[in-house]
Length: 172
Image 1 (cartoon, rainbow, N blue to C red):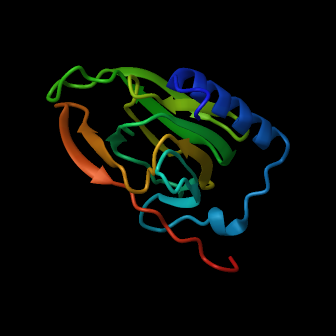
Image 2 (image 1 turned 180 degrees about the horizontal axis):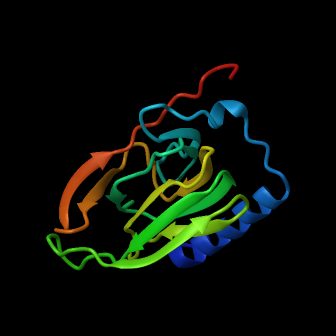
Image 3 (image 1 turned 30 degrees about the vertical axis):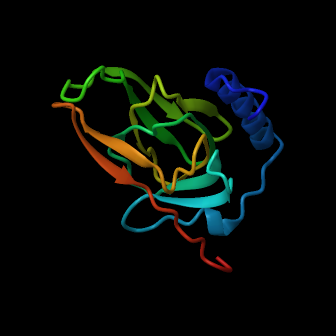
């Protein structure tokens, strides 16, 4: 991180490393793949003590998804299992502007994407299919403590939230 301060260069390198790890057969413990029946969960693998980055698994059960949201930092996601639908929006110039859909994509196991940079940071995701989706997420902050925006796409109204870390179940 100290050598690559440009987040676009940094996310490209992180994406390459994550892609290689997934291609080599990354072994993710079962405890990091357990969906919650009520909402998506994020299990931390590593959170930098200085809050500069975090690595986690994010799990959406069948039928679950996120609201439209931003991250307020850069992020890279690799799909470990299942399929994830992503709808990306143009980042609004000001609060209160309706959001415009930019792209839609379905991500499959082994695929990696730069999900966000601070200049391109609004999307929603959901489980696509009949099995939970598990993603490996790398962010440029402690995403479990970072205040982030949630958007109402039709009006552009913004509210703020903090994702919380889940605790992996022992011996799952």
